[in-house]
Image (cartoon, rainbow, N blue to C red; front, side, top):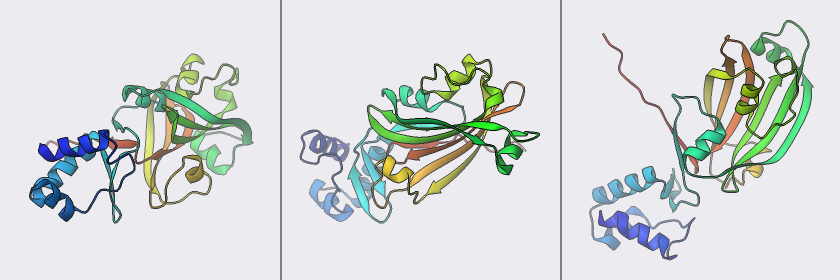
Length: 231
């Protein structure tokens, strides 16, 4: 499609560098000599390809980061998601601490009494861009050998400890503001994050990891394959 090719050319040439806000639909349609319906279809395709990002009520922008497009029917780690998009995963802002399990944590993990949890904070990067803020909680009893040798992927570490994750229960929430996470991910004003709160279970159906992952919506696009029920 002519419009798609022209927008890509203008982006590649530097005329419209990453982050550029595109003209209005009316102006673009006039510029390329097409109908607004044709233009909207072109922008839809470009958005699916990750070439542009639409921000509701603000406008359409040339994407600053290549998108990680992922289905959430299958349980992949953040590392795997980034690698599958052809980007290089990394970790920064790494910290490990210990906290006493509160009432909510005890109920979530099915703990019978007070127990310490490992509390892990880190920022996951894709080609050095900060894209996911991760907060993980793991009961110390799940990892008797601790976190020695931890490489940034909690999935890998649990598997090495003999507690591989087999499934997760996930709650998805949009996040408009967070005083710590937004600055850490360099989120711009008017942009939201997508929070995946997940309890992960091992092969024996035991809860082993409670995670809160905040994803940049200009980098991660999630989709779900849905099927109508059989009558």
